[in-house]
Image (tube, rainbow, N blue to C red; front, side, top):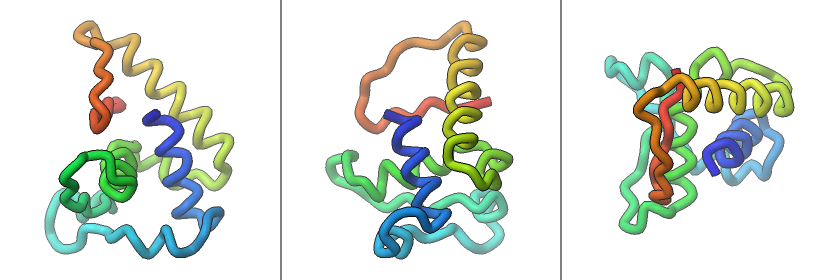
Length: 106
């Protein structure tokens, strides 16, 4: 789920999806740590299943070096490899099927 949602978010920010999606997301601005790394504002969500909430949460977990890639296929492949490498290398890794859980990539 995390890989597919991050790939869709990548396409939204590259202009490869309907433009009305792009205007639903806001970057954090100001002097915060999240603003410096161009993270998205994570809106409140009562159900934690809202697309804009999950999309922002997943996008904020994508490493900054991957956000600058131009090709969606290359992005998906590299992000998938990073996710797998992080899971394999993490001795504390456990499967978490919570809908809003986002695995942090190293």
